[in-house]
Amino acid sequence: MLLVVISLVGLGIQLIQPEGRPRSPIPIPTPPASRSLHLAPIGDFPIADVEALASHYREKFGIVVGLLPSIPVPDDAIDPSRTQLIAERLIEAIKASHELGADPGAVVIGLTNIDMYIAGKSWSYAFSLRVDDRFAVVSSARMNAYGADLTKQMRRLQKVVTKNIGVLYYGLPQNNDRGSVLYRDILGPLDLDHVSEDF
Figure 1 (cartoon, rainbow, N blue to C red):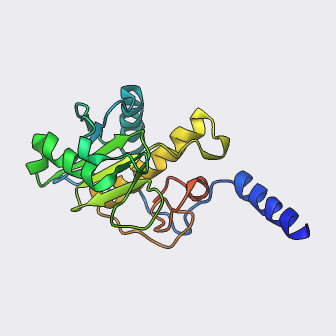
Figure 2 (cartoon, one colour; figure 1 turned 45 degrees about the vertical axis):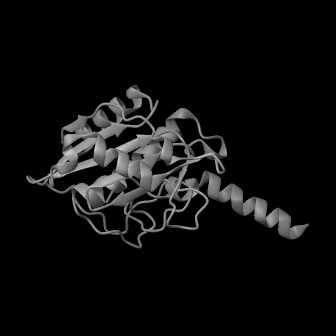
Protein backbone atom coordinates (compact mmCIF):
# COMPACT_ATOMS: atom_id res chain seq x y z
CA MET A 1 0.00 0.00 0.00
CA LEU A 2 2.80 2.40 0.91
CA LEU A 3 4.53 1.67 -2.40
CA VAL A 4 1.35 2.52 -4.29
CA VAL A 5 0.99 5.82 -2.42
CA ILE A 6 4.63 6.72 -3.10
CA SER A 7 4.17 5.90 -6.78
CA LEU A 8 1.06 8.07 -7.02
CA VAL A 9 2.80 10.94 -5.26
CA GLY A 10 5.72 10.60 -7.66
CA LEU A 11 3.38 10.71 -10.61
CA GLY A 12 1.68 13.78 -9.17
CA ILE A 13 5.03 15.54 -8.85
CA GLN A 14 5.79 14.72 -12.48
CA LEU A 15 2.42 16.06 -13.61
CA ILE A 16 2.89 19.42 -11.89
CA GLN A 17 6.62 19.70 -12.51
CA PRO A 18 7.38 23.10 -14.05
CA GLU A 19 9.08 23.47 -17.38
CA GLY A 20 12.85 23.26 -17.05
CA ARG A 21 15.58 25.45 -18.50
CA PRO A 22 18.71 24.41 -20.38
CA ARG A 23 21.82 24.37 -18.22
CA SER A 24 23.68 26.40 -20.84
CA PRO A 25 21.14 27.81 -23.31
CA ILE A 26 22.53 29.00 -26.62
CA PRO A 27 21.35 32.11 -28.48
CA ILE A 28 18.95 31.58 -31.37
CA PRO A 29 21.21 30.85 -34.35
CA THR A 30 21.22 33.03 -37.46
CA PRO A 31 18.93 31.52 -40.10
CA PRO A 32 21.16 29.63 -42.52
CA ALA A 33 21.22 31.21 -45.97
CA SER A 34 21.27 27.80 -47.64
CA ARG A 35 18.14 26.50 -45.91
CA SER A 36 14.40 27.11 -46.19
CA LEU A 37 11.76 25.78 -43.82
CA HIS A 38 8.33 24.44 -44.78
CA LEU A 39 5.40 22.84 -42.97
CA ALA A 40 3.19 20.30 -44.75
CA PRO A 41 -0.15 19.18 -43.25
CA ILE A 42 -0.99 15.52 -43.83
CA GLY A 43 -4.57 14.36 -44.18
CA ASP A 44 -6.97 16.48 -42.14
CA PHE A 45 -4.38 18.08 -39.87
CA PRO A 46 -5.95 21.48 -39.06
CA ILE A 47 -4.72 24.26 -41.34
CA ALA A 48 -5.31 26.73 -38.50
CA ASP A 49 -2.74 24.85 -36.40
CA VAL A 50 -0.22 24.92 -39.26
CA GLU A 51 -0.71 28.67 -39.58
CA ALA A 52 -0.37 29.11 -35.81
CA LEU A 53 2.91 27.18 -35.85
CA ALA A 54 4.25 29.26 -38.74
CA SER A 55 3.35 32.45 -36.88
CA HIS A 56 4.97 31.14 -33.71
CA TYR A 57 8.27 30.44 -35.47
CA ARG A 58 8.21 33.76 -37.28
CA GLU A 59 7.97 35.46 -33.90
CA LYS A 60 10.35 33.12 -32.06
CA PHE A 61 13.09 32.72 -34.67
CA GLY A 62 12.40 35.51 -37.16
CA ILE A 63 12.15 33.06 -40.04
CA VAL A 64 9.55 32.83 -42.79
CA VAL A 65 7.96 29.38 -42.82
CA GLY A 66 6.48 28.15 -46.08
CA LEU A 67 3.07 26.47 -45.87
CA LEU A 68 2.64 23.60 -48.30
CA PRO A 69 -0.58 22.06 -49.61
CA SER A 70 -2.05 19.18 -47.65
CA ILE A 71 -0.73 15.70 -48.48
CA PRO A 72 -3.22 12.81 -48.58
CA VAL A 73 -2.50 9.93 -46.23
CA PRO A 74 -1.16 7.15 -48.48
CA ASP A 75 -2.94 3.81 -48.21
CA ASP A 76 0.35 2.01 -47.60
CA ALA A 77 1.05 4.26 -44.61
CA ILE A 78 -1.96 2.90 -42.71
CA ASP A 79 -1.42 -0.06 -40.39
CA PRO A 80 -4.94 -1.28 -39.54
CA SER A 81 -3.61 -3.87 -37.10
CA ARG A 82 -2.28 -1.07 -34.88
CA THR A 83 -4.66 1.73 -35.95
CA GLN A 84 -1.56 3.85 -36.49
CA LEU A 85 0.35 5.36 -39.39
CA ILE A 86 3.81 4.19 -40.39
CA ALA A 87 6.19 7.15 -40.06
CA GLU A 88 8.61 5.99 -42.78
CA ARG A 89 5.79 5.82 -45.34
CA LEU A 90 4.70 9.33 -44.43
CA ILE A 91 8.23 10.59 -45.03
CA GLU A 92 8.18 8.98 -48.49
CA ALA A 93 4.86 10.70 -49.21
CA ILE A 94 6.34 14.05 -48.17
CA LYS A 95 9.33 13.54 -50.48
CA ALA A 96 7.12 12.60 -53.42
CA SER A 97 4.41 15.22 -53.00
CA HIS A 98 6.32 18.45 -53.49
CA GLU A 99 8.98 19.78 -55.84
CA LEU A 100 10.87 20.79 -52.72
CA GLY A 101 11.80 17.14 -52.35
CA ALA A 102 14.50 17.77 -54.95
CA ASP A 103 15.73 21.01 -53.35
CA PRO A 104 18.75 20.14 -51.17
CA GLY A 105 18.25 23.27 -49.08
CA ALA A 106 14.58 22.73 -48.27
CA VAL A 107 13.63 21.37 -44.86
CA VAL A 108 10.09 19.94 -44.87
CA ILE A 109 8.25 18.95 -41.69
CA GLY A 110 5.01 17.02 -42.18
CA LEU A 111 2.25 17.23 -39.57
CA THR A 112 -0.34 14.58 -38.81
CA ASN A 113 -2.97 14.35 -36.08
CA ILE A 114 -3.07 10.55 -36.35
CA ASP A 115 -1.00 8.35 -34.04
CA MET A 116 2.07 6.85 -35.70
CA TYR A 117 4.96 4.51 -35.07
CA ILE A 118 8.41 3.96 -36.55
CA ALA A 119 8.65 0.58 -38.25
CA GLY A 120 12.36 0.42 -37.57
CA LYS A 121 11.89 0.78 -33.80
CA SER A 122 10.21 -1.35 -31.14
CA TRP A 123 8.42 1.68 -29.69
CA SER A 124 4.65 1.65 -29.31
CA TYR A 125 4.40 5.13 -30.83
CA ALA A 126 6.53 8.07 -31.91
CA PHE A 127 6.24 11.84 -31.73
CA SER A 128 8.43 12.32 -34.80
CA LEU A 129 10.86 10.84 -37.28
CA ARG A 130 13.69 12.66 -39.07
CA VAL A 131 15.28 11.40 -42.29
CA ASP A 132 18.10 12.57 -44.59
CA ASP A 133 18.80 15.75 -42.57
CA ARG A 134 15.91 17.45 -44.42
CA PHE A 135 12.62 15.68 -43.77
CA ALA A 136 10.58 15.06 -40.65
CA VAL A 137 7.08 14.00 -39.73
CA VAL A 138 5.42 14.95 -36.44
CA SER A 139 2.28 13.49 -34.88
CA SER A 140 0.11 15.49 -32.48
CA ALA A 141 -1.97 12.44 -31.50
CA ARG A 142 -0.48 11.99 -28.01
CA MET A 143 -0.33 15.65 -27.05
CA ASN A 144 -3.61 15.39 -25.11
CA ALA A 145 -2.20 12.86 -22.62
CA TYR A 146 -2.85 13.38 -18.90
CA GLY A 147 -5.83 15.62 -19.59
CA ALA A 148 -3.84 18.39 -21.28
CA ASP A 149 -5.97 21.32 -22.40
CA LEU A 150 -5.66 22.81 -25.90
CA THR A 151 -3.04 25.34 -24.81
CA LYS A 152 -0.82 22.64 -23.33
CA GLN A 153 -1.32 20.41 -26.36
CA MET A 154 -0.12 23.18 -28.65
CA ARG A 155 2.83 23.88 -26.35
CA ARG A 156 3.85 20.22 -26.54
CA LEU A 157 3.47 20.22 -30.32
CA GLN A 158 5.59 23.35 -30.60
CA LYS A 159 8.38 21.69 -28.65
CA VAL A 160 8.46 18.64 -30.92
CA VAL A 161 8.47 20.79 -34.05
CA THR A 162 11.07 23.12 -32.53
CA LYS A 163 13.37 20.17 -31.84
CA ASN A 164 13.10 19.18 -35.50
CA ILE A 165 13.80 22.76 -36.58
CA GLY A 166 16.86 22.83 -34.34
CA VAL A 167 18.26 19.60 -35.75
CA LEU A 168 17.28 19.91 -39.42
CA TYR A 169 17.13 23.64 -40.12
CA TYR A 170 19.83 24.96 -37.80
CA GLY A 171 21.96 21.80 -37.82
CA LEU A 172 22.22 21.65 -34.03
CA PRO A 173 23.15 18.41 -32.22
CA GLN A 174 20.91 16.67 -29.72
CA ASN A 175 22.15 16.73 -26.14
CA ASN A 176 21.72 15.25 -22.66
CA ASP A 177 20.35 18.42 -21.05
CA ARG A 178 16.85 17.64 -19.71
CA GLY A 179 15.92 21.31 -19.85
CA SER A 180 16.77 21.73 -23.53
CA VAL A 181 14.35 21.13 -26.37
CA LEU A 182 17.24 19.26 -28.01
CA TYR A 183 17.25 16.65 -25.23
CA ARG A 184 17.79 13.34 -26.98
CA ASP A 185 15.52 11.21 -24.78
CA ILE A 186 12.12 12.85 -25.05
CA LEU A 187 10.12 9.65 -24.70
CA GLY A 188 6.68 10.80 -23.60
CA PRO A 189 4.40 13.76 -22.85
CA LEU A 190 5.87 14.31 -19.37
CA ASP A 191 9.32 14.66 -20.88
CA LEU A 192 7.88 17.27 -23.22
CA ASP A 193 6.42 19.13 -20.27
CA HIS A 194 9.79 19.21 -18.54
CA VAL A 195 11.94 20.50 -21.41
CA SER A 196 11.80 24.14 -22.38
CA GLU A 197 11.51 25.36 -25.97
CA ASP A 198 15.03 26.78 -25.77
CA PHE A 199 18.13 25.31 -27.36
